[in-house]
Length: 203
Length: 203
DNA sequence: GCCCTGGTTGACCGATTGGTACAATTTTTC
DNA sequence: GAAAAATTGTACCAATCGGTCAACCAGGGC
Image 1 (cartoon, rainbow over the protein chains, first blue to last red):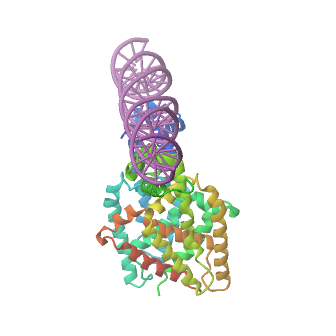
Image 2 (image 1 turned 60 degrees about the vertical axis):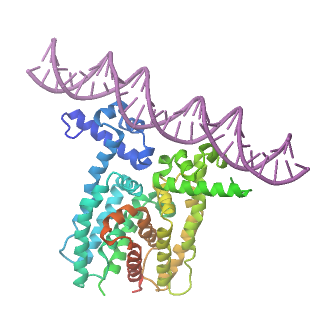
Image 3 (image 1 turned 90 degrees about the vertical axis):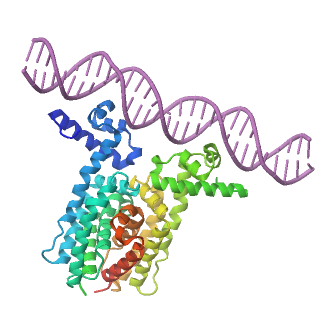
């Protein structure tokens, strides 16, 4: 279903993708069933397969749409003002993504844990290039003495890990922070901001 | 299968759990099948169900055995020498676990992402208590001015996230670090050690 | 030899699943 | 408003999966 031609097509494909995101992110690819997706989208199962050729096609459509928005925050980390603030801003942007799009984060996590069978070429291609570019940017900052001596790749890994943790391991975080209720995202922001600022401060 | 009574029982239950760890960690609970586990354990499917009452029982047995060893490194973080070194040592211990037991880490990640349906009581119980204890320990270090002002819970979350990332997202890490080959765990150790040391240094 | 207990298996079953056939219906187009 | 195209639900199929069952085997003690 590449170019929706009618209003009803657009509405239904959107409903399907929305429902599929719900189900796939909660149950994984194998755990999700077309019946569950159909029910949540308020469509019949054959109707799903009228808009998408297969279960896998729905999944791939979701992942494809996701990858771009997932890489955007990193693209915005540029050479400009204070490098430390630039990186901290990226951390907070990424954490905000975890807060606003936890389902997308879990879908992505699921795919990677399973060996990324559907997006391997994305990782080896566009993501790899973006990563190399930003790692080089960080290397430049290090050489200029503007931030502490860190490896760009592992710094970015640590940012991904710490921020996505709040989406992917949400149940654990909430379970352990229960007395504190629901305000843990702003606590996390405060912690990460201070943490990265101290760790990156030159000298 | 609580207490293996014969030699052959012990051998087979171990073979089953080993094979199940392989399959469950790679494909998730739903994605794993008894046939795959049986084949990898070189046993017949009914034979599996002679030793374990159900697929879920195998899974639960794995998780139960895992939780303890997973919490051990944190237990060892005690009040003693330099708090910064104590925390850094914990980070490296945890990273070493990711290197040596990636399947266990992925199994755990899978369970949590899915909402931890089988180990929720473990999280709300023993893990919660351990976490509270260690968070209090960290709070003490902060109040004594021995480490920077950080929240204990979020510090521990960040350690879990950064270290487990190398096991759970192994495919992505390897894909992006490809030119560097396989030695990325020692690079990660160096990065994390410097990172946490700088971020935790008092003042 | 014989038995007995632990261990093993091929054949099978019911439930679920992804996907299809097709007729019925609605919407668009002229 | 009728023909054409797009959309939708009912019934169904083949494959797969977790689990069962009755029969069978191994080998040590008598």
